[in-house]
Amino acid sequence: MRHIMSRFLRVFLLAGLAAVSFGIASTALAAEEGLLSLHYDVTGKRLLKIEANQLFQRTDEGMAWNPIPLPEDVAGGQLRAVSIPSTDPQTLYIAGTSMGVQRSTDNGETWQALNDTLPSQEITALTVHRRQDEILYAQVANDGIYQSEDAGTTWKKMDSGPSQTVNRIIHSDMEGSMQTGWLYAVSDDAVRLSMDCFCGWRPTGGLDAGRVYDVAYNLGDPKRVYVATQQSLWSSNNGGQEWQRVEGDDTVLVALTLSPEGTLYGLNHKGELLQSEDEGQSWTYPDA
Image (tube, rainbow, N blue to C red; front, top):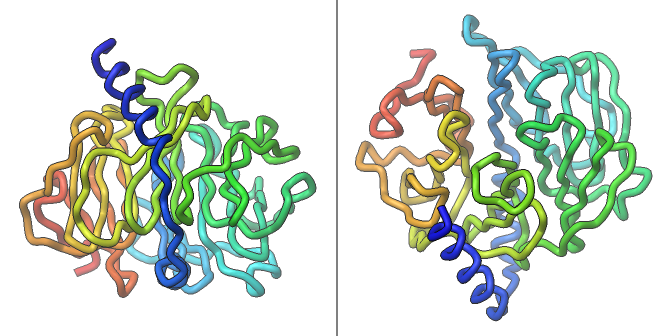
């Protein structure tokens, strides 16, 4: 473990010396394709899907996607993220551009805006802490990453974040952090990693796979991480230090999530749901 920590910290220092350019064209593409997102609700045993500015749910037993009511101001922006606390399936957090962060404690029947101490309502990514339900992380466009320790009532800027636009962000309780875990941030070009003490960002291991879409990890084995790219699926056994291309049918997914039982779920460009029971080597349409 000391060897792994040493490697992480050395790469953090090296990455801090590198300047990274910002791509306007890739940002526009990210916004367009960011309409599709997938999240697994561990406690409620259901999938949540963002598609065409709407939020849908689907239980393990059911085949149909059922809409979840959203606040009216979602129509004026772009819904980008949904996240659920690990112990409360009735509480939903959503975020997006021109709508900020909003919370429902009754599965979408009513909503409350949580933007009073945020600098803007332009949110590109959001996640709840893996273990601590009151802690949230939000990426504010052209500003940085904000943290709330009181379920979104107040926010504090923690870090300027990666230079590239962050399209996805997830919290992991993988060991080795100097605080409670790690944050993975997905941009068009890479997956970046930071301890949640915000001690610096670094790219994960070499991932020469074109456009990067999404990241997910195994809750029972957090070092097992998957990345969806335009060149199929990649995986890592050491938290993203090294990546291996998953040998399979080269299915391209733009959204990715993982159930505690190990089932991988993904959405293709059409928003169609696929699943894999063999770590991404083959994919099937559960509705077929």
